[in-house]
Length: 153
Image (tube, rainbow, N blue to C red; front, side):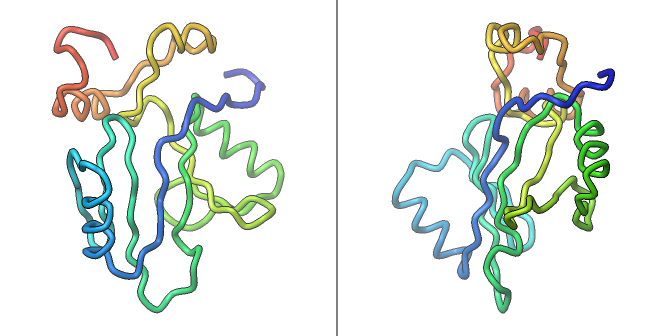
């Protein structure tokens, strides 16, 4: 990328705050057929193919501390640079999270690093046919049977 702003590619995930993680999983499980659930302490990731819904258990915290949505971009370092150029504070942590001027928490993820996959004709139509998944994302897609073993991602 040379001086242009990064392109939005899609939404990776939505994260919601819940006060009882098990009750939330029971609710969503009674409402939808859940294909798979991955967990980290205090978080459940409900699989939606190459996207997911994250449920974050909050106890003794104010709302909106972890609620956010993830935007998929073609150039994550360029987003960081654009935010820094505007004086936007990058939130602490290993991810690229920031608050917009209205307090909405946004997490930026690189298309090459995630399972979410645009169909080749869509990528071509967006002028992003050059984007290729990195090895970890390809392995995650293969593990779920979402990519043919010989197909490029």
